[in-house]
Figure 1 (tube, rainbow, N blue to C red):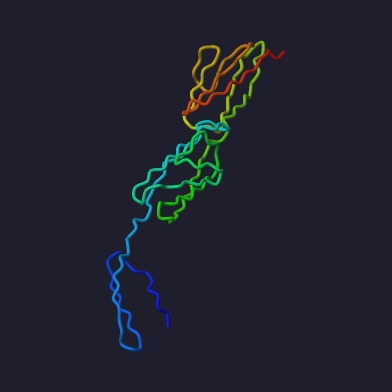
Figure 2 (figure 1 turned 90 degrees about the horizontal axis):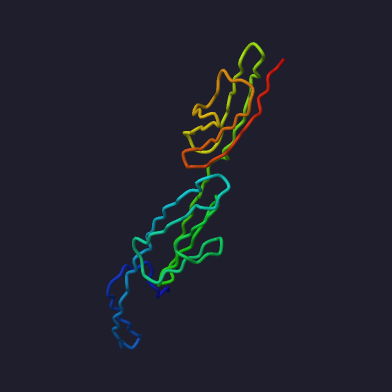
Length: 183
């Protein structure tokens, strides 16, 4: 028969062992109840596409002290910094040798890009610039070398036009165009 006991909760237990001759012995043992490791993680995502400024900040809420942290990227610290986008997994082992696992996705915005379409001015009619911006994090701000702050420019003459586009995270690109009169 199986003389083992499983799934015992914490507490004091007494066992009496008797042999065939009627001799017996009592023994008391204590099962310590362990506190499972509970934790949470806060992710800071990458600010601009292609950067490595994401982070994962773990907080242990409950558990037995002397934690060991093993991240799948080889790090052994509780928190991770200077991360690029990707999935990061952690194994946390407490002082009793019990392990729990976590997985975190660090994301990044789509690359901030811009393109210009120009309706060229002629000798009898001024032109227009249609600026298209994609990616990054909305909303965008526009600053043209002409002092304009709108996305598109209307009623323009020949000349040099440059725009700095900044998204809501402070990511920045510059685009420019030389506009010439059509004959």
